[in-house]
Image: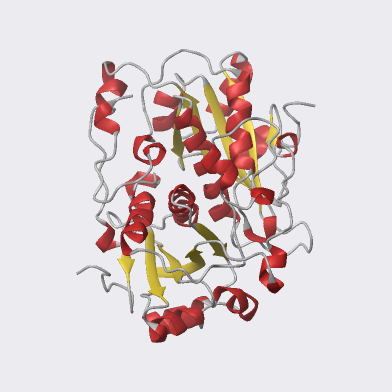
Length: 197
Length: 197
């Protein structure tokens, strides 16, 4: 992997978590169909509110240029610019209501995140990488893929092997990862009160 | 671990993903403070839209019964019934707007899911388990912990070592895990068209 992308941690974490990152540059090496199924199997086993499993995915690969182009057209242009080189694109959708009672599922977006996180770590374990996007065109996606009214597209993500560190996208991939420290988001006793002042 | 809780997979996935599960029964063994910090460090390195890192957490442990009780009071009663035995409770909150421009962050709930998923898998790697809940009282949480208007509480979760498989909660933990098969949520070419018919 690209060493600059391994998280510089303040507290030890599992390698899979430290090594996961979101490339802009993808290799043109295709993703094996069995690897792809294991990624979605990983998503499958995420937890969800009332085990509703509200996530739905629509996949397109470069093997089918017409389908790939249809999915690519549902991304905002700045995302199309790099995502068009990825071997696999996926649209992340949710069911907005509980199947058992038709009531709104307030956890739907959250639970899509749980599923895609599993998928991303399974990808990391296989030398693959996932780059997620919120910059999509949900209305376009609804039209192109006939998404029913009680479902919606929220995200998209590219899957593939990290690519060369040259060119515009490769340059973007050379910047180190950064995060706010734990004490800026972990509180105790009241909002904003750092646990470790 | 509780063998009945290991996912029975259709396609191979990493052990961390197959072994993660959500217990109702928790041991009274406390969680080491360093383990807890590593769990939040794992959350820290999740991806997020524009690297906003919208997740915020408020933690309470049984070591401080008053704080624990305050957090417990923000759960709906059916969740209080089992969560009161966990050694650690956490409230999951989000910042609703991007810090850089004040615009609504449509990925906030989703990205909280990404962070808590990392946390849960780090827990699994350490023999701990996490049980997430959407059944909380967000208005009560806002009042109790002075959550500002541009943030909200969405979830809570219990952290601890899985407990005995006896009693009401232990019984609940003896049921096998189930999920819909991949071909029910993975589509190609259009919504609802299974990739593997």
